[in-house]
Image 1 (cartoon, rainbow, N blue to C red):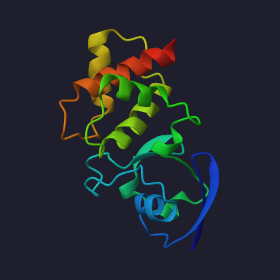
Image 2 (image 1 turned 45 degrees about the vertical axis):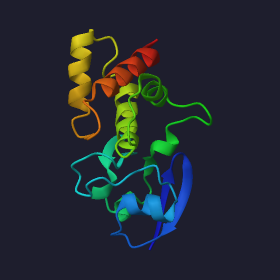
Image 3 (image 1 turned 90 degrees about the horizontal axis):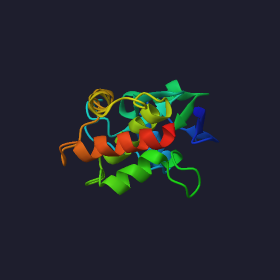
Image 4 (image 1 turned 90 degrees about the vertical axis):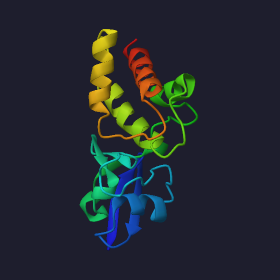
Length: 160
């Protein structure tokens, strides 16, 4: 079946089974390998993408459900050579470790930052809010502190 969708601002057509996972269509058919598979069960968030403005686990979405819809992957966060504020902050704050969870965290965090969900909060409430908003993204390499620091820094940058 031909599935037409918009990926990172570009119209794409893939000929695949409509039951194929969006994660697999992105990686195998569209060669966008930034989106990672962690658990394959929707528990870890490594495969998070933005589907029509909402953060979703791409391992739980059949590509047939995406016909005519818009998807943003980690590759689509940057504007050309200019990284998204979250990507820059993850690098600057040392919030990236092995790299399996980082794309999903970056996509989810960009979604949170772009919506202004942590801007203007005091430090303690901002940290609690970020931790709650990222609860679906699991990282086994870190205690999350540097990731939270990065997201707060990005939120403050975007709010300025």
